[in-house]
Image 1: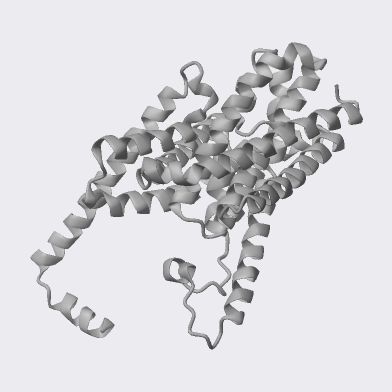
Image 2 (image 1 turned 90 degrees about the vertical axis):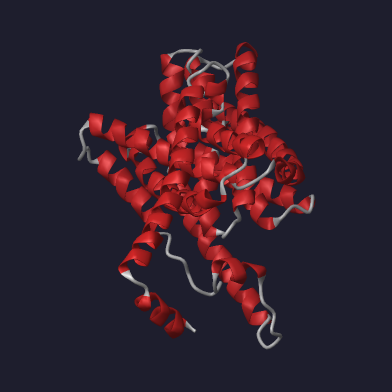
Length: 368
């Protein structure tokens, strides 16, 4: 069959080959144009009051969903949108590593590192167990747990390919976690006078418990520069955990699927995931996570000028926003309504417990 197809292609004249290339280019360019417009629109909307707490990535998802509901997605653009979503996502995650300066994390001290590790471990386990208790899909539960525990939509995007989640699961989890983070940001700002924390203590609290980097900045900046600086450092300490968590989840999911495949040998059982993602007993090398760590090292060593680093980070968020817009274009409001209730409930419970744990640990460690 493949040989016949090859023979057929080789018989095509130069004009038909050119027409094929033009058709593919138009598909790619039309898909690219849609996601770029949505990503840029999300960037500017994220600079407005209130919307800045949601951040560019979440707004890009929501704009994608709204665009699909209002105008529909041209069929010829689908191939381009899917390609950009996958490639742009990985490239954006790699460049996102430039946010991390490992020296700052080390200088923050062992208490801050311990706070981040404990909070992440507790939240991952707690949210996942809640998701399983309410009979939520396993992959949706993992994504919700990672988004709540580590760094919101960016964590969801990084972990999604590792556990072979669908576009619907990724988009719903990212949007759910971001909405929760926005709610908690408003609550934090309102509750600051009642918490009994110093400016630095509040910054540590916000950085250790809020979801997105945008949430952390929005919640800490009104309190003062010291609070904002500490909040970002603590938050980036959590972001640094993204690579090992994503890698670990990928290995765990691979072993789980491999074990499941072995049990089904001889029964002619075809797994749904094999239809979409290929054989599950193959370890997918998370090369983009390696790139994320490499870029962290580049930033830590100061290899690039500050201006170049800042520009590349803008590009990173543009690429991630394009990928998120692509995810949003792939789901409709009915799907979001059907899948979003349980993740929201699990994320809400996990976020409350994370806030309580974070506040208690800050008191215990004397970081007030």
